Length: 408
Image (cartoon, rainbow, N blue to C red; front, side):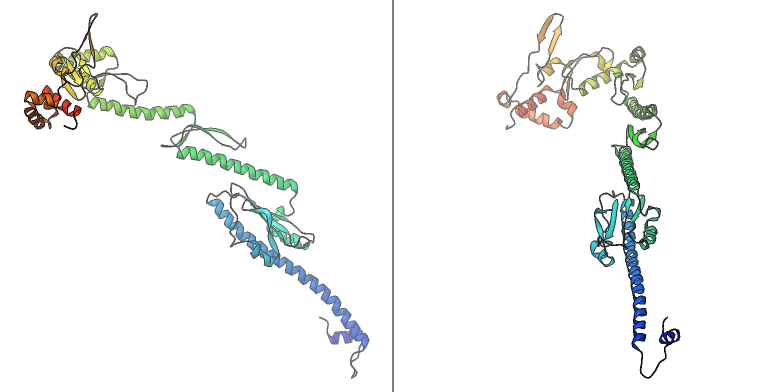
């Protein structure tokens, strides 16, 4: 530190009552001028570097926010750091601004406000679709900016155009990989009702492309299409077996195909699959009446209308039946009085005979015959018993009249 005593000693100046000479003052002013010019330059440099540090702090905070977005599954190309963390207003005190077109988390950069800046430098970061971060910086003209640039970006300080192009290509590849695998896992896990079945493409690490054919059954990855087919057959087999068991419990008879068992034909006798028609017929002979009952029930459930020829045999198999909706008749005369009469032809040899048609009874005719009250009373009493209701043809005709004359 220069002092008056120092100057007096080194310049051999003696202090007198007359004060400093003009030469002494000129010398002091010159020395102080030199010192001040050096100090101001250094002070300006450190102030600038402090501003760079301030900008780096805000940049790091914005990077943390962007990484949080990425971890939450947000595409970094679609979001920007929050304004509360970094913005042109907050960067103003550091003499920085957000670079035009570089404001997304995937590619975020700040630059000095002054385009002629020699100490402050451009810096930023890139986040690819995999969440990997690359920090990048470009040092300013003055060498003093290099240490801060490397503190921020390390070896990526002063990156060449070739490096930047390689980073951009890597980012594009990472996004392609993410999109490919996102689509694959959506198919695998979210395909209704229980996950993907079959094959789908996912990311091929060796080929660096979305070309790896992957097999799965209901959300579980398998080794091949054969494994998928085996898993599907096992599941369908379980469903089919449950349906076959249901037929057994219901003692179903006859040749049957089941939707749950595609491509299979069953030869049921008392609900047991006899495997062949011959074996079924042998069983049928032992359970002839049960078999006949099953055929009658099946015909009625399938909506058969008109005559149903029983196969002959004991019990219910010894007579024919006529069906009309929910009604079942054992005599054609009763069927001819129903609403279904005239809906079928009967053929005997080469001669075709037509049924006599429905005998239409309306309430007016019944009134004339004086029987409508008796019919109404009887039929209302037996309505709760559908079997009894259908056994007397008068109730059927009475109901037909009601259907034909709803206002009555």
